[in-house]
Length: 200
Image (cartoon, rainbow, N blue to C red; front, side, top):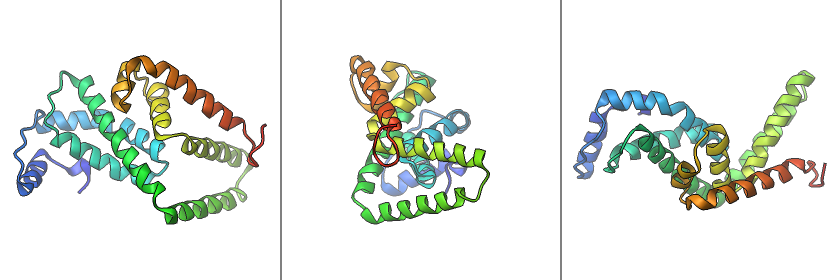
């Protein structure tokens, strides 16, 4: 069942099976509108955090499911959105931990990267350069911690405030400026490295 086809009635039925009684704050129309406003940026965020489009699809569904199950009162639409990103951040963090515990997955990813490199060798130079640089940035992002990736994406792709970032990733607001500075500096250092591990 995809999130796009998920209705509040479906969620209520699932909860009834589990023995929970959940009262939803949003009616179906309001949820649909909220979903349309937030699904694309949320998917992009999850895709960057995980580096895996299929996993981002799965986590997107789980994020909205958990959001709908939550009984938390929301002050306004911005508050709902921050709660949604906080749920997504936690799910991505858990997925990262599971991934680190599964060495077989790393082998499959390395093989996929090799196939992409071979494919790039048969394409025009401009496309190869763009794909190579994009792959390089993705690889660097994967070397950052999940919290660093979250903070950089929220700050520079989503334009979130320091308070919003703090709420989403679970840190104190005054520490966000320093943590972002460190994340930017680390990413810049990684981008300066050559493929063989030296400095450009």
